[in-house]
Image 1 (cartoon, rainbow, N blue to C red):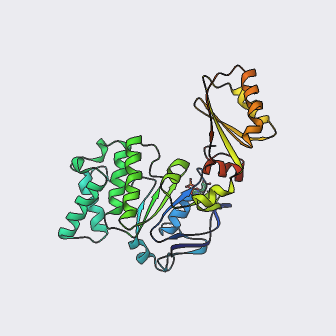
Image 2: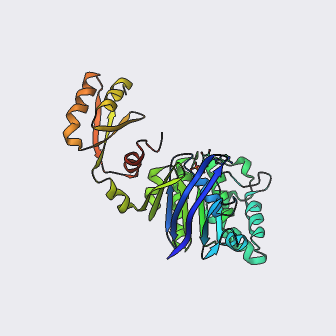
Image 3: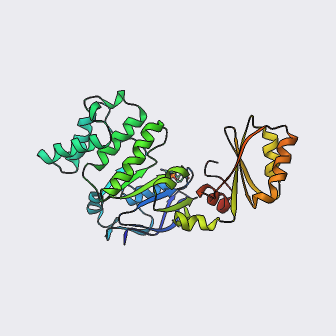
Length: 311
Ligand code: ADP
């Protein structure tokens, strides 16, 4: 059953279409991953869904309620973890969570219990008396999450919650998303990291230039790119000219440098492997490892747009 229905929604900034006739739904109880490069329109979509931004055209329903016509009822169902941190630096961690709890209308023992629960949930109980000014970026994000979930909302929306934080906090956040989902919340998780979305989502929407370009379960999406292949070649030292020559090969869609790894996107790798090896050899590139990677969401994005998510 659909919990969120986004119907033909458009948002414009001046002449620029940030969200372009977007239609998609999120089912009750699922983790829905909204994937797309920076500027794709994910935050704009999230802001319209949370009632923070007016919808120019189209409609959004949440649990059968219209976001435009019943904004207060809708807001009560949502816990939003925005991209920009929404915490108060001069309050302690505990005071921050208390503040948001009161905003949601919690009082007395219930409020105190939920504050404990939320702080424990994000692993900040030991630091509850400290001010966020002394926290790492990841800890501030976790506090932000505690503030957003303490009223146990039906829908939790996290907008790029792992940007610019340490791997430990990142894993903690991904674990929390799964736990919140198991405890009954529907989750919408936006990211431009394919690996994260792939790791936690039951269904995925991929956005680019304001439009939904792919939508479905991971299996549905991967079936689109069953013909596509990706080679991951780790080398002693990347030679830019060699990568450029690989890109010029008529059968190769794209070659991307990631540190000392060259990712080559193509169809039918076995037929063209010799060509790639020949080019690398010509430029005296020393190969340390070569693996064929199963088609993933990055492969799909590339086949649909000709670009990588990281471009
Ligand atoms: P994402 O979250 O996928 O990175 P956004 O929704 O933030 O993308 O942005 C989508 C597009 O809308 C971008 O081209 C961005 O520059 C534009 N945009 C977003 N907010 C504003 C704004 N307040 N004024 C003008 N343009 C905006």
